[in-house]
Length: 381
Image (cartoon, rainbow, N blue to C red; front, side, top):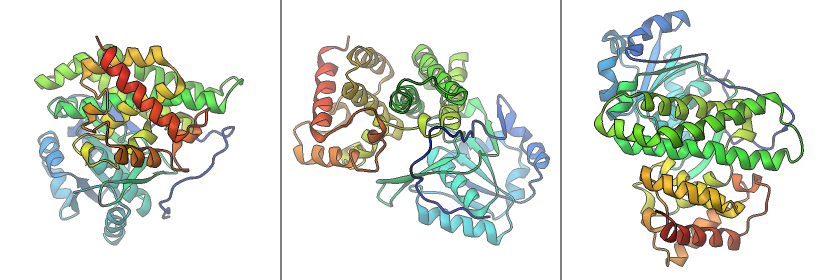
């Protein structure tokens, strides 16, 4: 059965649709050596590998030598962004070659392409993250962009991913910027979930499935603020530490559980809308998704008037090396034309910022940006 790739619309907050976890999850040294046995257990015989070239070179030494032979010519190196055209092209190959499962290897782009292609072709998805920059390996959702890298939409899929395998040594030797981005993106799980719950469940006790989601978001925040700095140090040294393992799992496992259990009430609010607005700026193309989302958290907190939490995060961001201001995003604060485009895109009618429990105007957003800039200069220790 094929599933049309489209943006989902309004949802009923009283009906739970839980896709809390993949069918099978493993993390640990040597886990990728077991992949053939695991594929056999789920009756997968014909595979197609989707990955980035750098990711393949990082992960290949940890895979059985026979896996590439099993794939044969069913192999796609992806470049650029996750676009509808790329997914359509790959899914057609999957169907034509009677593939049982896609093995996605890489970061968010490769994994999003692999997931969407598998869903579109109606087959299984096996995901092997080479970095911990998002919860993409866990979450049955893909983010789509146009060919210029401008965000267009995201799509939630009807089923959870089939299998997720993590070799920590791969992530420990990846560039530290990716883990930094993962920390930023995953911190947003807590702050955006708080905003959504405050909007959707004003005076009500939360349903149990949403309590699981919210508790997972608290774990994300607490682990990242406690262990983030040490985990970044481990990655800069290329070693696997207990702190790094906890941060990887906070990003991928509990980060994925927030939306997996909470659905729309555990996904995105203001911070991701700010990210989407920032994609209008060529100046931020060198930054990763999670780094932009991290800045978006600060703007969301400013909009909510949560100044004490904003000030606390600024000091953590300073330790982590996450962007604190427009200047650190390499955006000129005096470039009014660019700021107008960013604000307008962040406030498009379809943006998740409108799910928050307040109406946000262009003036409100300008004021929040100015407040964060002011605080980042005067309050960071």
